[in-house]
Image (cartoon, rainbow, N blue to C red; front, side):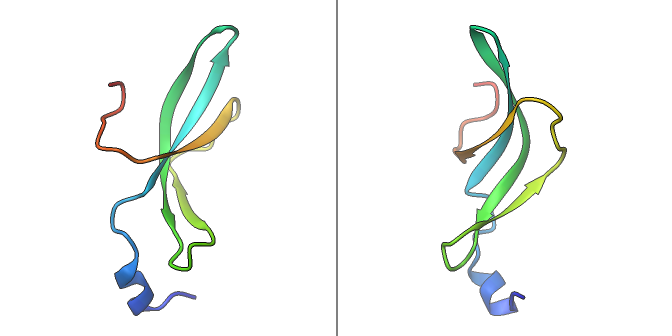
Length: 71
């Protein structure tokens, strides 16, 4: 269980973005943003919030950047 003190030190913005990646056989894969992740305060894990759960492809976590999707 987390305390309010721990929550206050957690980053407000996610540090990672979750994508569904579907391969297209030799072509560039299709990346769709599906969620985000925040590190635990102790550095030993992540809280992951997914907006949807893909039925195919894979989930990839990437470091969040200021770059917008599709750029």
